[in-house]
Length: 116
Length: 118
Image 1 (cartoon, rainbow over the protein chains, first blue to last red):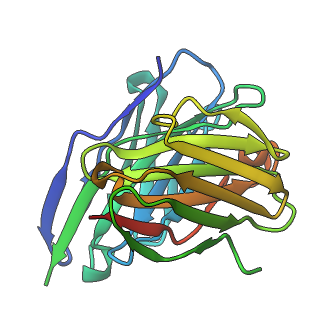
Image 2: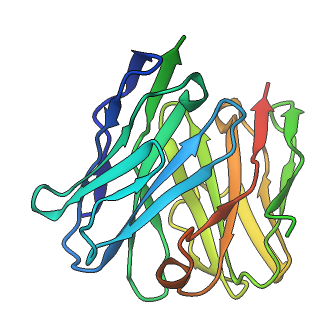
């Protein structure tokens, strides 16, 4: 069975702190894709990153970085020097390369509050 | 590009009434997804269309829910009769075939419809 677990339900930090959001996934497939989305208080879902299962390179985009480790089935997301605007719910998702089916399997999200 | 357009943004209705949610996918996208988001269950895929044909409707909660995609540019999600437990945010998303292998974003979501059934 496929599953995405975001064990941290809520995280609260003070501005400028670094914070890591955990994501652990389960799948027996060898080809799959992992995503992170951000949902700010306004409610829309904003794409952050996609990573395929064959690319284990870590990625950095400004203050955001992602650590993909197949050995531990984890795809963690770190925000460096957090800002109030980073306050949102963050979702990790798994998509299988399963023929015609393009289901995304979602974690329950981590609510991040960055306080001034 | 106008993005995925959903209407209405908010809907308040009385229990027992019929509710219709609408979605216009991005032009050229041939896959369309309806999701429901609640605090208790998170994001749930309700139904997925590919080339206007329903591929996976295993997430549709019960017979009160139905979805149609009469053409490539329009889809509806109907709840009849509505119940208070249907209160949620309903998202529509679209993508192209093999989008996850070609298009980094994979899926483009609409802004959602917040449904409240009283």
